[in-house]
Length: 549
Ligand code: ATP
Ligand code: MG
Ligand code: MG
Image (tube, rainbow, N blue to C red; front, side, top):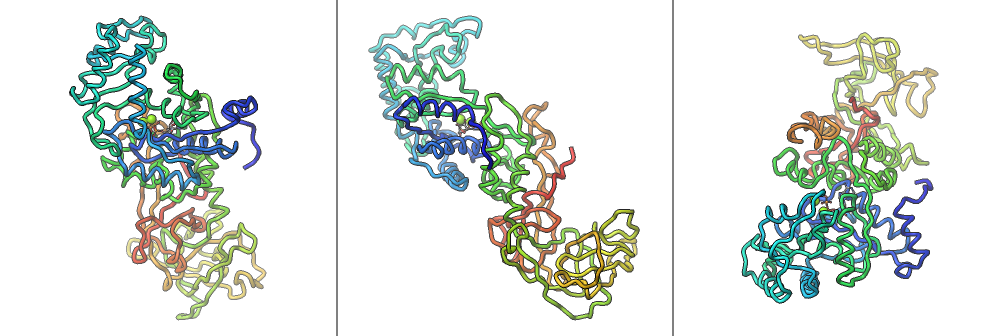
């Protein structure tokens, strides 16, 4: 992509490098919670974090933020690694916040011993009330003045499993009057008797995000910890912990999260779509997940290009999904091989072409590339399938396709002229009869005839069938999360249409993961469930922006 000016995070990094901060070192991290599959919003964060390290000769850690045992799973860990790699990035270290549980516990005890943390027996409701409101300061309770010795003992007992879930929490003693609610004695640890996917039953107390994230950054000596805007009010606490514990001074920087229209992006909502059967799974091609985009036929380059084009914003905004579609069209236009498929077939009979005769025509793979990237044989015969919409019995003016008395070129083949139609009892056209001009063969046309239109076709005796899945947007409104009622009420009932089409023979050897342009119909790729016996193609995107608002 072309030269662009620095984004504000690159400016910060360049300033830090020229000031010699951390010896000019750049070390970022991507910290997913393994509680779902990655989505296009995560792709933005991945491109940003890994992109910075790449650009400035630094490193990026992949850190699983696995501090909540209830929602996390190794299935998610594996999918996250696959998706990051697929996007084209390699991490310097694969790390887990849970590997720091011992260290984090020691940090917490350190704060207790400094008189900067205390064990609180209040219920969540009491804690919320005592915190006050943004305009009124909070009020200290009797637990806040517990002695250091008592707090050490109670915290050790919490860890030892002496109390049930929710009986006590460990809180930082910061400032109950702070205008920042996050500084009003935030919770550091809660009791949860739950099995963790990595540490098993070793722990029954788990650190909160605010007491795990910054400390993990500091342990790894992360120089630039990049997160989304909702963490701006957490920053003073992030710095408070690092300061009080005298840890490596990682710094947090925030950018606007990516919001995309006609979809939802929270993992909680995506999980509902999966669990309640609205989609086939996390990698359903309609999902905004990276695995869904991959199965749909998106390429890593197109997703990276999209992330580059949207830039790094400081304010929330909504990106039009058309931009994502534009990026994949641009990429596939350069790389996809051209093939012919007829999705809504009607039979065409060339009455002056000898019965039983077959000839082999030739079509190039990719006209966008010098030399066409080779080509393939295309069998031609007297009977062809063509697209129903490419014929009109009584064509209006400027209909540059086939009609009775109208001529058109068959792609890679001959010029034909419509002669007559055969209809069934209901008046539906079942066959179109035409004649061809033998001298008009593509590549050696001596007919001297010019026609305006070209249509695609597939030879009837050589055609193979395939299941073809046509996808549309998953939601029928721009921002389903902001509508009345449940977001699932706004699912587009026509988001998936499954049809059977005729494809040219050569597509039986289509390569998984490769993009194909079905001429005039869009870009398609093999679905992961496609087999030799039953070919299944997913439409990645149409050729033009066909969305009607
Ligand atoms: P969700 O709200 O979808 O559950 P999350 O932020 O809780 O997302 P994490 O697994 O914690 O999910 O995210 C890992 C990283 O990806 C974080 O640094 C987070 O800020 C970033 N991220 C998540 N969603 C987006 C988004 N829409 N745009 C940009 N970055 C995002
Ligand atoms: Mg998160
Ligand atoms: Mg989340």
